[in-house]
Image (tube, rainbow, N blue to C red):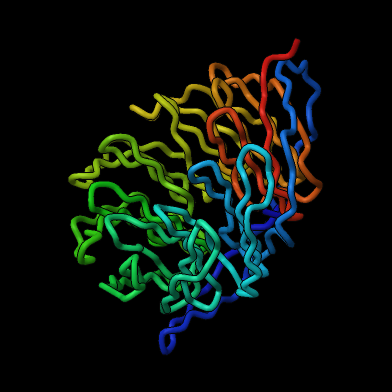
Length: 385
């Protein structure tokens, strides 16, 4: 995300295709200057490898994924790679030359990835060989998700598709309208116990049965209010999270909360919004809002544990939990490390000069980050000596 810009997409559905126009919202202001602090955490680079051209400025959702000791990543020009998670050694690479837009998503023996041309591709995650491809109705910005033998994939025009994971044959499609004006992006479906939960641009959360695409319930998380189309934006575009039977979801327009997955009942809400989504860990929930505030909440009731405002207007990624710390990246390529307990800044390290293609990904004691310059980097941290 570049400084002071918020991209918006105006979708026009015509003969199954979606065209987009780009708009800019007013600048948020100058980014906060980095503060001096006493570092109490040592962050060490484990390895680094380049995957290609990294991300572009088209609002894509290309984020690294982990499975069984491997990290998978892709760039917008079609390069897809698998590397050893411990050493960073490249295991295989595919130069698909596709305009990749979301993924990779890895499950079982598959790697799924979406394109700007409205297709999803299924590869073998063992060697990168192509298994099948399938057509959707418009570009794919949400990660395809495999659940119970069905690949759940959504397109930017509001449609959600179910594909047979082995053959790519379409099993069902769910169609709903979307606002004429919306932020560019879609949240990845959250799946659990045979149900997919889809966040929509109109502020609704919908439960869909994975086996046949039927709707279980629909609840409005955020209401669309205001005098102008811009004021009425309430998109649910960021990643959701699930713990037991609770779904945690946030919209762009200052509303987030917990929803009971069985009924759609809103358990609690808080007037905090984000476009990048949220993350949970034990009893904590973390998110970064559009202004650059970093929040840690009690996920059980939404109570604020702390709010850190030293990174205002720095274009923050979605945070990630790492042991007793919470990490967030900014548009200048810095990773900032805070104590989960009280929000104290304990470390800062720079990955590159042009920000991140995705939020940090934490697996065990290692954090993996994909920079906009195409570098995939692994770090580990420990107390300063």
